[in-house]
Length: 359
Picture 1 (spheres, rainbow, N blue to C red):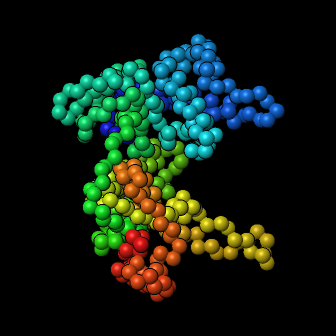
Picture 2 (picture 1 turned 180 degrees about the vertical axis):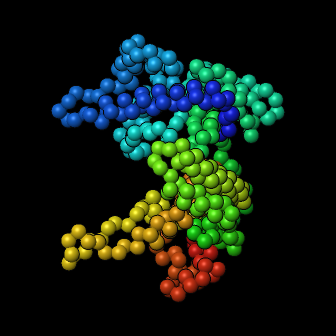
Picture 3 (picture 1 turned 90 degrees about the vertical axis):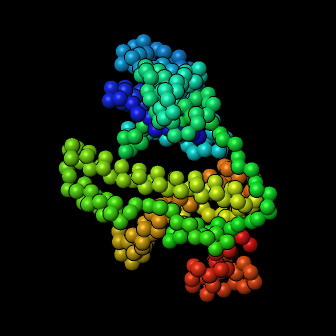
């Protein structure tokens, strides 16, 4: 998916937020209908019936009729597809969309191709009920039948085209590399290379702590609290952009250099779960220490290094060339002689540790 930075005017931002709220309202209403189903009731209405109900609602309510019908109908189509994906077992259960967290809508059809290139750096896209909105040409515009307008927590607007790029061809050299993901070193290659994902600088980390202290002293619902949350969101967005940029460049480089890429088959979602509470068997309503704070720090380190996204992008760019290795005893087994011992993991700079995923 190719994403571009959108630069709407203040009036267009207010109109875009209104479109997002209408798309979110229609999605949540369809989710409510679907969630109320029980085995003793008839089948919940599908897209056709919900589209008919939407037409009746637009006639009854002026505020709903003032928005784009294309955006609202597409929200119903997206929800219908999400339900089908859930029953097929390929996606999770559809959840509620919240204001400030899920801000966006999708445009499909001939309107998605109404794009005008202004110059070498800028272009414009026609958004229903909004008009022409300019966006930055950071790359070539792909041919797509739909696009999605989103707003992140930092207040930035983006335009994403639903286009799947071509995979990167294998170099044909027959070289195999093992990638060991870690917290101190983001990716250690079997060739001896140590790759680190960039994050916030020391000065930015100090500013983040300062803003978090000020946020703790702010009164809920105040304008100062909103400003502090926006400033914190900008720092987190900056770290996320650096992480995504590093993952894109690293995955592209690995896909171009090696024919086969081997990674540990880690369950990142399960590894980053919070530890369960340990009740004290001798005292009621008392819990034993479970090292929750230490586990939270480890979870932040895993997520900050993008373990899951790195493998996902490798599979997208080099399909069929990614091999997942069972992680059991890989940290204790030498890839050269095959000797297995717990002492082999004393130093992360050991050659056997760096190349263990290439076995």
